[in-house]
Image 1 (tube, helix red, strand yellow):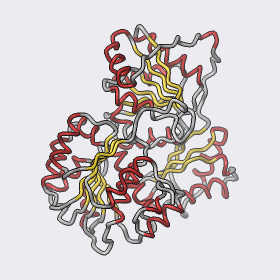
Image 2 (image 1 turned 30 degrees about the horizontal axis):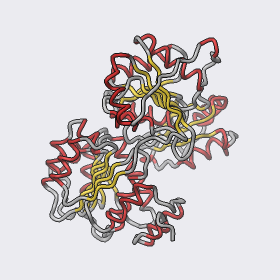
Image 3 (image 1 turned 180 degrees about the horizontal axis):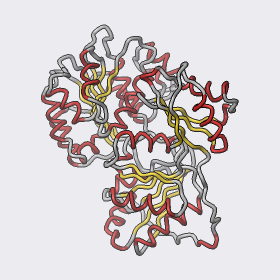
Image 4 (image 1 turned 120 degrees about the horizontal axis):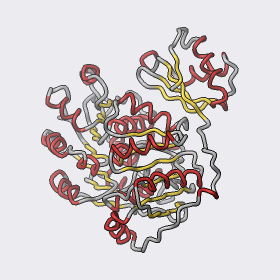
Length: 460
């Protein structure tokens, strides 16, 4: 049997059957290295970049030992951001769908405390959440961890960067003994080593190389001399490569806003993602970027960490990251699963010390390329092919993706190929449609019904 096949692990048959239906047959490197240790009950430190499959590694470990008959919290997953917490919970539910009656509850900001408290009162098997909200529920004695078997720190480096160390230590103090500790991180700074020494017992260290694949990622560096030239370089590179989906990394929230405003002024479709956005704003930004209604997302490292963005054509580093390991992690966002990707980095003479550290980390010199000449480029901007409609009904109203698709295709005569991703949230739903069909789709949904009722709809 293949050494990287899930079937060679001692997994619950229901989990294995579900993995087959999800076409997950072969483990990724981080799964193959960490899962045997996790399933044997050892504490594990896993270092791997976002998108490496680490969620499935710790999720399968928690699900495999779950006692469904006992409606007590047995697994706890802590994430740095609300988006990542919701994504992890969604992935865990998908992996657990063949095992009946598993309750996975998300405890993160952006949702009323009262709703979460009510859900906790009914019990849960697994909690996924952010440090501050979990600590708050523990302090109010809404959440009890007496029966906990495994806790996970996901994207631990970002949690420390965001100032959550005290919250993590407060949570760790109330955990029962014994318990299993799993820590996953894209980078491994000294703070991670210190916290792992405090909370873990003889952990197994698993590292998967984060150096990008030179066969699938075209990695280019460009020297710029001023803010104006840096902004103009973005314009030139986007015109040169005409990517469908681009993630631009900035070091600060202020830079995110500057870059987004500049790109919009130049005629590009761009949105920004940073810590000052309200939850509903963040939801809309990510929905529009994932469903290709917006071509460019401008984000800070903290905001973008953990976001599961598939088929990313291009990454642009507006500045060189402070940490070379973080910079390499950024570049690895593109060119995944064998697809071709482009990573471009802009730097000035003032960032030479960062470049030197990056060269040391990569173990080879970096040769900057000349920026493309405007006269050689097609001035036409690659516009998004999709647009997004927001509907005033969601999970609370029992809306399903099939309801929206049926309304558009059966009632409205729109072809299924003209409908893109459909996202259902608690109170809202979003559907992507091709821009040529936008007005027709708007008319159909405004004048039709979903589940027998009228629903508000608007273009975002």
